Length: 387
Image (cartoon, rainbow, N blue to C red; front, side, top):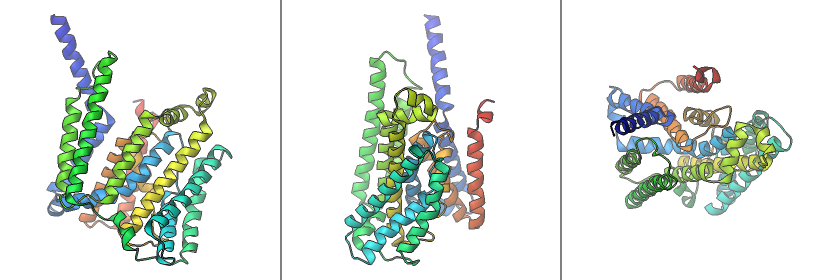
C-alpha cells in the first residue's frame, strides 16, 4: 500500500513537472511577466492596465493571429510565405477599388478579394509542389509583385473612405453579444477538456498532467478576463481571429490534413512513400494561408477605413513569422501548435504596445522585433535543443 502511494505521488510530481516544463505554459508565463512589468512601470502603468488598452491590443494582433494560423501550417510542412504583407495590400486594394470607384456592395467586394487570394494561393502551391521551386523563392516573387500590382490597380493612390456596410469588419459587437460569445467559448472549451479526459479513461490511458482541473480553471479565468476587457464590446477582428484559431486547431489535430502536414514536415520523402498526397496537401495549405491573408487585408482596410497600397501590410510577414516561431512552431518543420501561435502574437503585440506607450522610436522597434525573431530561432536550433 505504501509503495502504491509513493508511486502515485511520484507520478503526480512527474505529471506536474511535465505541465510546468511545457513550452506553451512557459510562453504564458512570459506573457504574464510582460503584463506585470508594464502594469507597474511608471511610464505605462496608468495606460496599460485598462480595458480599453487590452481591447485595442487584441484587435491589433488579430491580423497577425489570422495569418499566423495559416503560416503555422505552412512552416509545419517546411515551407514559408513571404508574400502575406503584399497579399494583404493587394486584397485590400481590390475590395476598396470595387467599392469606392465602382460602388459595389461589401459582400461582393469581399468575394472578389477572396477570389484573388484563391488564385494567389493556388499559384504558390503549384510553384512549390509541381515546379519544385523553393518556397522562399516562390513567395519572394509575390512579395515583390503583389504590392506593385496593388499600386497599379489603385493608380498609386490611397483609396478611402470605405462604405458603412464594409466598416463593420473593423467595428465592435454589442456588449451582450460579446459576453454571450465569451461564455459560449468557455463552455465549448470545458466540454472539449472533459471529453478528452473521458476518452482517455475509456481507453485505459493515464491522466495527463494534473488532470482536467487546471485547464478548466484556466478556461474560466481567461473567460472572466475577456469579459472584463470587452465591457464595451468585442472587436469583430478578435472574433474572426478566434474563429480562425478554432478552425486551425481542428485542422491541425483532428483531420487528415493535419496528420499529413505533420508527416510532410517530419520527412517529406518518407511521407510520399507512405502514400501521403504531398502535392495536394501543399497546394491546400498555401491556398488556406492566402485566404486568411485576404481576411486580414479586409480587416485592415476596415480598421483604417481605406487602403494605402504602398504601406498596407508592410513588414507584416516579419510580425507573423515572429509570432509563429515564438509560439513554438519549428522553422525546420514537423512541430506546430495553434495556441502557441496565439500566445506568440500576444507577446509580440504586448511588446509593440509597451514600446508605443514608452514612446520608443519606431526604428528601434524594428530592431527589437528582428532581435526577438533571431532569439526565438536560436532557441529552436538543433544545437541549442541538444544541450
